[in-house]
Amino acid sequence: MLLRAYGMARSLVMYYGVPGKHRRASRLYGEFLKPGDLAFDVGAHVGGRVRVWRGLGARVVAVEPQPDCLRALRLFYGRDGGVTIVPEAVGARPGQAELALSTATPTVSSMSRDWIESVATDSSFARVRWDRSVKVDVTTLDGLIAAHGVPAFCKIDVEGFEADVLAGLSRVVPALSFEYVPSAHEAGLEALRLVERLGAAAGGYVYNYSPVETMRFAAGRWLDAATLERQLERIRPRGRSGDVYARLRH
Image 1 (cartoon, one colour):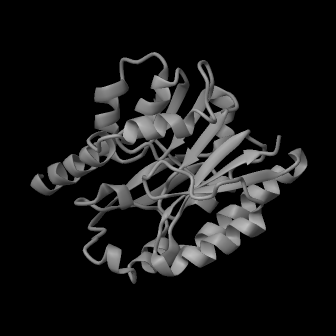
Image 2 (cartoon, rainbow, N blue to C red; image 1 turned 45 degrees about the vertical axis):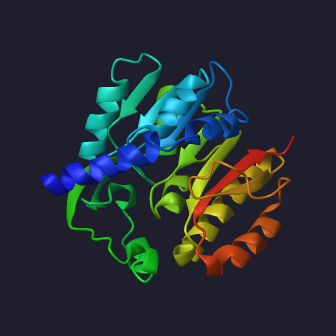
């Protein structure tokens, strides 16, 4: 119980207690969201992005399967009519799956055993333990769109399960992001390929990259997929994880 409390406290400090982070995040996401827009937060965790997006006036569907994180989301946003909390995971098809939980570091709980094996070799994950698991219900992005509408922006941060989430999306969304971890490089490239495939029918996506939780774009201009892939390959030895952002070409 103490370890679970420690893990949640760590997450709350990370997402709510860093000076200046909320302001930077509001500026970044303001490029994608305006008042009244719909946003999907897939892997909402304790709601750090929910807070930012509500401040921008967006309506939010917050999707999170971890029981402890769900309690935090319901405490913070359960009475907010602009937030819909979905207590499920997202994958390629509806059903159920095992979620591997890290009690002390709940930010890295994952449904991808391959991802866990990949990052276990990374020194930054040396102290991480996935010490329990829970069975969770799984929906798809197509299912969420059918229930709530097409989002203006969709964030996918699910610790190596990003490609599985994108495999459950059959239509273009205007903008999205997905997590990239250098020690699981191929998983990130697979997610990029799926996004490219989705965007082909609508003129294609352009991309940028934000190193972990900096809320700043690394590139001074938006890039095509091949250029982004070369950039990710360059930063790979430095272990700079972060988020890839995609938006439709104007």
